[in-house]
Image (cartoon, rainbow, N blue to C red; front, side):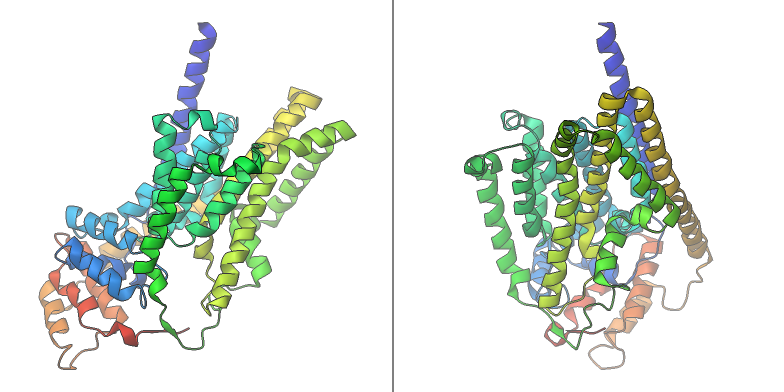
Length: 466
């Protein structure tokens, strides 16, 4: 009974600390007071439409051009959020925040299922402070966080033993992950088979039983919805392109950009890279001193290493797809792989530190865990301070905004009324951003004049440019 009470107390403390750390990282990246920028405005204006049917019509008309490569699902939930809560920055970004919570919960399910201790989960939450490209989309009203959430949820589901998947919790996890993935992002199709094969191999499931392992009902329904959504949205076509440079947004060589993004938490600090590299070498040396120890270490450590390799492989595949389509290679396309790499690092450290404890005793394992903890904590300091300063800066910016002559609904109505006469330019991005932020500052409903954003333009003439 005393042991049970101790275990329960440890679990309660573990959940409480992890929840607190997750809350801090969510607040830091919530962008609750950041002004809308143009890409978000494209979704914000949907709140002006009269019904879900109107939104579906816009999705059908614009996914082959301005909203190319999208399923339209995020556009729908954005409309519902703004319709329900009104024209607020937090309402525009609420769906991404909820998917961020889902991602953190699914990550915990997976890591705890792999016997990662609570301290490892705490380290994972702290590590995410440094994964800025990933966590930025917790506070961005766009479709990237749903992809990361769905991929991690699927990973967690396929690592639950098959005999336990019939319980309500695993069922909800598996079905929700698949339905989110197939409805919210086309790139889910690249991750699903990769994760399925990886999970089966890591759990020594025979390939001849892969269909049973995959859950045929889940695959059948998920694949059907995926193609149904695709044929009605992103598979209809793409926008015209005018000599796009695929590397325009990359800022670095592809082979350097991939590790820079997947391991962003440590990549920017050379001292921490060296310390972490030495730690990994020390862990390998302490756990591979004999042939038998080496084989056992490889048996336990290859799955987290392979998970990181899977993340890198899918990123390379996505980059190749962008090149083949003549589209930009943009790091935000990689958010799901960044999430997988983050999980893989913590999983790997947990496995190796446990092996050190088994082979060398508790003291060396505590030293290794301490070094890993210090490196992860140190990597989070600058990003956390940067986010705090950024939030303060946005608050000051919002307080100091001077209401201009174009900051009222009447001015928006006057501006949009000139579209048909050619008096004003409906393609003026800065004007749409100005009015959207004015609406968000005042709250209430999304101004109905924003309907003109989609209704006043010929989207077939839309073209992508650098």
